Image (cartoon, rainbow, N blue to C red; front, side, top):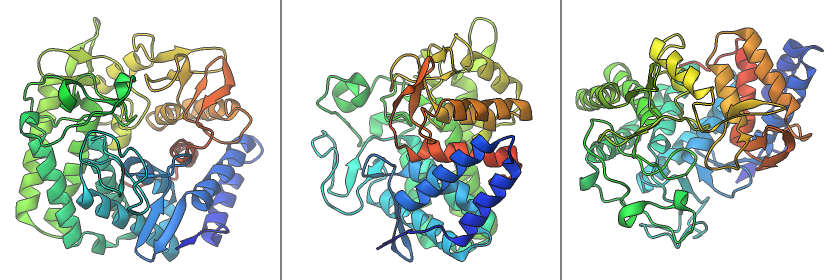
Length: 429
């Protein structure tokens, strides 16, 4: 096993490029960018072997399928010209595939089968699994990373027979979870925190079939209130389209391409038919629905979120229904929208009232074409780092020195991606 003990030249050159672009006007951006862009590489990434990379989420000693994708995503532009960074990212994808094939219902894994994590949860645990909260996005992110990796490197060998096995596993699970009564999954945790366990004997609340696929938990790792999680279904539509493209044009497999296309259409129709509600003024996307008429008209700062729909590739930024939803989310109509002396943005049931998330602020910037708005958000993020030159999980809008999670690599790398985006350095989709 090896870890990065010093910055590769390509990474150092890229950080210098960002610093030059920022100049004196945006020196605060470049200072945080350099700190966190290097921090992720030096502190969270372990090269187990040439084909295996383990990625710590930060202050929790486990690898999340979701977080690990977001953590390495801003290195993709460097992978185009650095074979070592390319191999590191390919190793992340390989490790993610191993995780999915080990248990597609798990969201976070140990480095080896050491039995760490939530082994007392009432679900089917193994010593390799840190946590087994089923979240749709845990399966979306590795497929997304594979496709984005290909877009940057043109390395089509990533789409081999094991990729087919992973794709089939994901499709099969999502089809089962279109009718959760047929699912083998249950989850209960002995806790007083209701967001950490599922009701109804670990099965979750009652739902009707909609065409969408069921999720136990949100990307915050909090339990869904209504188990058709709309932004995660949006993300599923996007990655199913990736699969359809891969199996139609790169590693041709008509059967898998047809399965991906059919499921994509069913989920998309489910969103159209069951996930659009009026907020009293306009039609918007609901965050969660149950197919029985109930809906949650909020958003959560974790990605996938409704705010992130264009970032994920589900719709265009100027889509009318998205803009209606965005207006709702970024207003007091969203009960987790907070505004204070230093900032305003989206919070979560996962963190204290009045605390907002840098991830959501970054997504707000990544889903607008207004450069001034992007700059304003970056200035806010710099001004609310609590004096640490790092991003956090959340911070108090009236006192940014109060924050949760001092070391949270996902938030750090979302900041980096927004800085890159401001200077038109895009992650290719």
